[in-house]
Image (cartoon, rainbow, N blue to C red; front, side, top):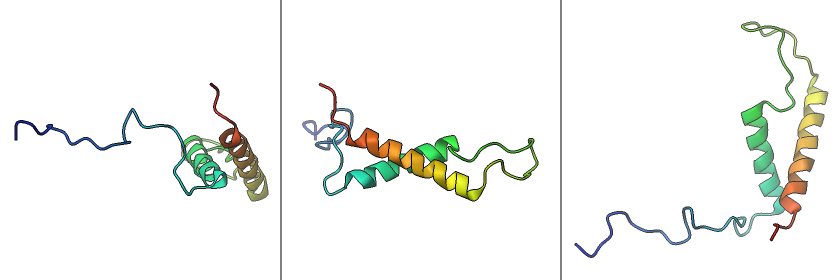
Length: 86
């Protein structure tokens, strides 16, 4: 028991793991996940509401919101498609 580490070590996980994408996932899938993360955490494309506590008419129509999300997806595809700097 004294020879066993207190915390099990999992190969390829943690701070030493590479930043490569998961095998089997396309660049579009990775870009979509990135887009969802950015959109949800920042409220990207939603615009602002009139005042606090009231859910007035949104500043953007659903078409404008969809266009903003598509633009964000294209930006994410561009970032994911770039070669890493050496």
